[in-house]
Amino acid sequence: MQYKLIDILICPECKNFPLQLSVNSKSGQIDNELDGKARAHFFKRFECEIFCAFRNKSIKDLMQNKSKKLSCNGCLKINIISGHLFCSKCRTKYLIINGIPRMIPKKFADL
Amino acid sequence: MPAGLGKNSKKVYSAYHRIIKSYEKTNMLITFFQVNRWRKFIINSIAEEIRKLHIKRPLVLDAGAGPGFMGDLFNRQIKSNIILLDYSIEMLENSIIDCNKVQGLFEALPFRDKCFDVVLSGFAFHASIDMNKSASEFARVNKYYTGLVSIGKSRNKIKQKLGAFYIYNLIPIIARLSAGSNYKEFKKISEIYKNIPNNNELLTILKKYYNIEIFKQKAFDTIYQIIAKSKNNKK
Ligand SMILES: [Zn+2]
Ligand SMILES: [Zn+2]
Image (cartoon, rainbow over all chains, first blue to last red):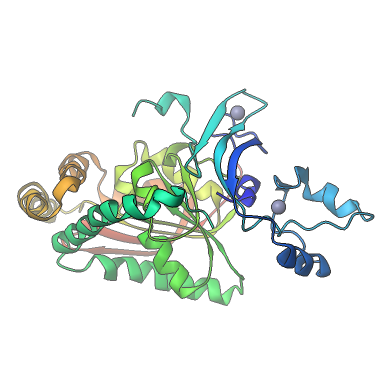
């Protein structure tokens, strides 16, 4: 899965957003060319809409940080293979295995 | 790009590839080769509307994606960000498109409100555990259009009997001959048909959360095609 998926994922138990990402393994690298191109565009700088897990910051914060002009497109070629997502509100942990986050609420876990 | 299985993927893929092929072959046979046509009607109609809205790279959810047939067809019409959601990890790991995938349930979609321009679901909505909850979740995450094609039931008693005859007696035979290890998937259809509401009852559920734009029925009303626009009102 790509970092930008975190920008739309919520906790299926309590609907909290954003979830905290921990990465155990990933493949691919930051794409500097893509990143540079994105930075040159004021409006296309951010692939994420609200929260960028790659920068671990809200887009609002990233926009305000003028001294360090950041984009969040450099991460598009990185594939998170394993790790987990954590909901700080209801303290549920969701595993990421083989690049797929397992987002099944507890009460449905034994389907 | 998301690869999942990494270096071993090729070996494993070929085995699963056969399973998915036999799965789709069975879909074709039990629908008299109409399955793709029924999917495409939904895809093409929604793609046309999305083009009118000038949305670049729409974010599209394929809910109950299986290997991602609906998402793949849509992506051929309009280059999109496709997200596949399914309960089956096996299907997701062997999807036919390279995109982000999530294991999840219709009744508790793990996505933000209104984040998807389009929500698609092909031959999956009938299997939802709680249709009312699923419909409300589909509408919650959807900004513009939702397209459903699925197994339904006529409200007309005669058509209902004809549909039941086909589903209870003929599908199991066809599936037994062609589905291989997917046979179980198709056995479920009989159980599902018994339990689903008729298509009018389904529309009543959907109308709580959606404005229905297109509603069509096929094959003694055992198949419905629905295009709906999310009301997206805060409950
Ligand atoms: Zn980002
Ligand atoms: Zn939570």
